[in-house]
Image 1 (cartoon, rainbow, N blue to C red):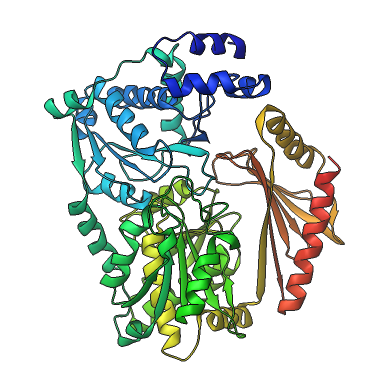
Image 2: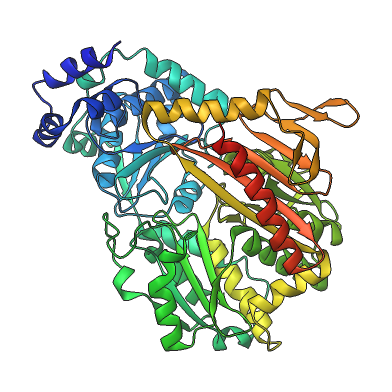
Length: 570
């Protein structure tokens, strides 16, 4: 297949929608090659890409192709799997509702039933619905926190978690057998309804899910009544559940950012609907200053990630990192459970390999085991399933603003996290402290852990090649020292080896293969390199620990500068 032959195939397809035809006519040569030189990649994280025409873009035909691959996989697993069906949800992005229906229409052509949410819903509710309805799989149409020109397609297994590699590979095998996605057969909606191949779901399931979230509470005292919260769904799905979940937990002073309350696929009030970025909180901070709010909360478009801002000692709002929010949640839950005598002896906390070691220190203090997983919440969900009956899951999180408290969901859940961080804030307020005060207490107890993330965005074919060059250079020619500290250990998660450069000893790591490198320095600092599986980025993670805030900030700057300079020389 060449991009030009694919271009001809698409341009001569008589049933191509007029909007896609118009897009084809407006493309220059470079845009054509990028849109047609390959199939949009599908993996364990699903697929995600820019909206547009061509096999390397999100459109109805690429959605039909991956759904046909999923349908063939379900057929392989027998009549019972087909009967159990697939739950489908979608967010507020361009094309999301249309893509959800296209998925149902494609599944229907294989005789597979779909349970489609009647309106946009968060990703965690999709995960919950798969488990609650005992469906065989789930589909979430979302591009998470990506810019407005993106959309995506995530597939969930019967356990409510994103697919493991073996299942994803099986779907890819079936997709590769499809020679022409443009001629795949689908059933129309009226046929699906008449043949009972689609059911629409919504409010009844909302209530069940919200009841589960309410059951996570550790304290129901009156301090919640005095907490003032500002919440923004950033034009996404969070508005459907987060305010109600907070109210159910006893919070009465909840102000919604009106300008960002309603769904908007263009996300016009922000440059990016990403709660990790300060600009996404600009309106929430304005509301906070006007209302004197104690806590500012923001969820991304599919409400699986939660951003948090709190007042510092100067009374200004500061954004917490994902690592800081995760540490506060972990400490609050473990301390309260220990105080109430309900912290199980066989407890385990799960985090990813690029998440701060502060969580490990906190868990160890409470006698809770820490297990590291690869980046991606599916690996945390996989461990929850593996440990069922043997270990008591307490908390799972990753530095990228993803947290899970109750395992009735098997993906990161901003609804759960919003309720629990608000409960923690109310607890501290009852002691005349803020969440920021609580964070400083953690640093004073365990050391000043500081972490950072730097990403290089490299789009297109040339960008993908440059990302490979960067990773390969660090793998094949690793640095001997970084900012005055010798590199002590290298963990190569692709080969599964941990190498101690000072002793020349090697050991195997019990984790799946992944294109990630992690370098540990002699002073305890570390950095990791990981190409994104869903965006045209290579990500560099950094972590340090020093005795004071100033020392940690300075050490973090030094390590980052040394690594970034090495990247720029490639």
